[in-house]
Image 1 (cartoon, rainbow, N blue to C red):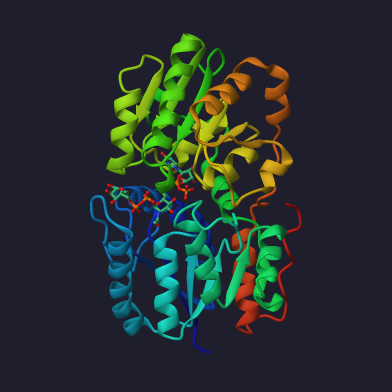
Image 2 (spheres, rainbow, N blue to C red; image 1 turned 135 degrees about the vertical axis):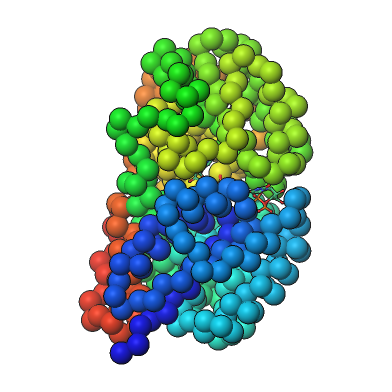
Length: 386
Ligand code: UD1
Ligand code: UDP
């Protein structure tokens, strides 16, 4: 029997991190022919992940442009994939999450009548504009997909409410927890010497990331001004580490406001093993990222989310993640509470992990085999979560 040909398509850093364990799992299967196509919506930040996980690509559309628009990403991915599908004609295309690469790759597969598997399906903020354009990207991908790999029970419920057939949904856990099994090490030594030198015992180390499109401009200025005032108020008691996203729109604001402060370390994007091990050692995290909201609860650190709504409510309900929005006063106040109030800190610093058990990739592979008739055994659903 011929092998089942699966083409995994992704383009940005978070998609690559979360697809990496699945690609490794697919490569081990004798019944599959696994191909990887990157759009390179991100270039350097994608290549960092490909190197770390030793992923070899079969196709690289190399689309990234400086300050690219949504229109540019959409049209170049769509055009680029026409050739790839013509050549490969796969049995299944796998996409991940909610980026513009995700949606457009699903659309291109649909135009070619190729089956689509959506990894990390069913997350919803129920607000069209937050996160923008990701909420709609994920929803549209869900409309196009044939198989939905929902990370949590809540994500499955969201899909069922939208009329997705139950047979096509598999609760798998999130593959990011699989990725962390690969990156996090107890005796990890950083390649960046500056991270080895930080006094994690005696300073409250705050890790920051912020890049979202809807936060560009005033919201990101508020975030940076609040961080600046925290750094000035708490002096050598805190140390702020901010690996800055490569987007020039983000960098301008961040470097203007936070550059030159003694207790603020502005870094280039970190390799993911460096980032994960830094978060494992820090005091707390402040972020507008989606992925960090899943990773940090697993590490038992409080997370202040610099957004008004989230499509990842499970850890908010568990109490380790708090939505604080993007108003200066609120960010300053909530960060101060965690820096001063031990009781509140301890209440939030509980390791909870509603997002996975490290077996998500295994379940996704089993589900694909089941759907394509390569096994009669349906994978067991991932149970915990919201
Ligand atoms: C994209 C995704 C977002 C995801 C984020 C993860 C969309 C619309 N947005 O947003 O969902 O959360 O990635 O980080 O799909 N750049 C570089 N080098 C890189 C990467 C980016 O220089 O390796 C710069 C380029 O100037 C590029 C800009 O950043 O034009 C923006 O990249 P883009 O992918 O459009 O948006 P992100 O904000 O990264
Ligand atoms: N990350 C990284 N290096 C960094 C910052 C983040 O490897 O300098 C990782 C982080 O641990 C998480 C992912 O990148 O796994 C999150 O990506 P990002 O914030 O770009 O996108 P989002 O999750 O918001 O879509």
